[in-house]
Length: 468
Image (tube, rainbow, N blue to C red; front, side):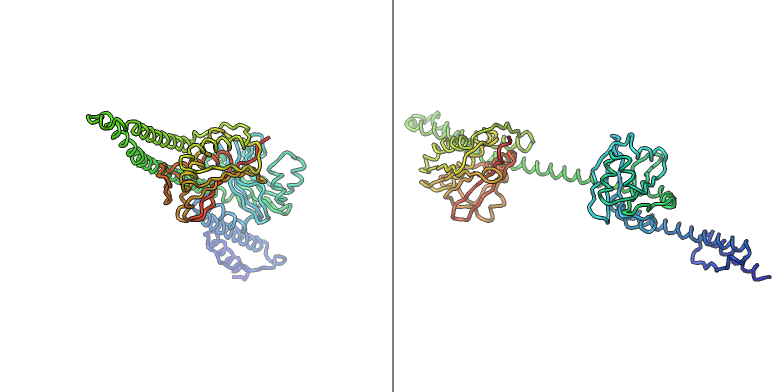
């Protein structure tokens, strides 16, 4: 047998092994200028088959690695890493088709700098070049994005990509069971990057890839639904806790005044009423105080319920700041007089604010009554107002016991009672500061406190400038 025949038999054996997917074979080199044309053909065929088999093996490895991703984010990150070996790119993006006929950018990653075409960008599918890609079912190559933008200057997505520094792109449709679900975009900072072989390579694994992407999207959607259910359950649990707290507050704070009222009525209307005839006025005044306290408690609970249910609305009016502050000081001064407390208003600046006057009165009454409540008898409460660069700051300064460090995190939270006690035995619902915070935040302002134990407290709030 001649050496040529032996060599031919060896090549046939190599071809047979390659066709069975056996890799690692060594294909001998020949001099194609002098060799038998049949040997040249067999050698070339062996090399081509070897390359195809290696490519197929690599693509299988890539899809296996990508399939190891759990959520859609995991899968996309693996695509970004794994595809570098088969398709050149600096950027990969994914867009999904929504039922409303929109294409929404879902994810993008780039090594070329800031991403302008980011997640959330939407555009209509109808009449777009993407719709044409779906109709043909074939990926599209644009090897000169700048020239494409010149030809189609209204293409906002192309403009964003070009702004990112991309100069060529490969757009690949994602289709599951003949239904288009989205697009995968490969982009490069260099022009003329993409060739037909890149389309061919992508198409070889397209069917597996879209199944992986769809599976990961389903898992992501299920995880999102799980998180939403978890948050809803947490919200329901908080509402249940609030309900229990509401019942406890109502039971505790309404029981004492109701008991006092019932006892007083029994005394002035019972068999021994004559003994208490001279004290009837005192009893009636006490009943009146207890009823007012209960009305105040119920009002606070209703206000907080309105706020937490989302029915809290403002009716804004342009109001002179000094007018609303002077009115609050005048009303609260009458109540503070019984304790010998003086309320002073210091207007460093004045101007127009855009507020809901009834709600602002409620806020000021709460803060001033708290300042009086926790200050010692015959002390002074000061309210200061001044303009700041972004608006207005109003501050209520008392001479009370101050706020302890362990109490600060509970301020402005509903149903909280601090360690400090009112100096005149006044009642407290534990809701006033929580309502104040909601009122100020609804006005786009902020509220806070500056305090040291034993040195009084300064409750303050800010209001933005009036919109012209």
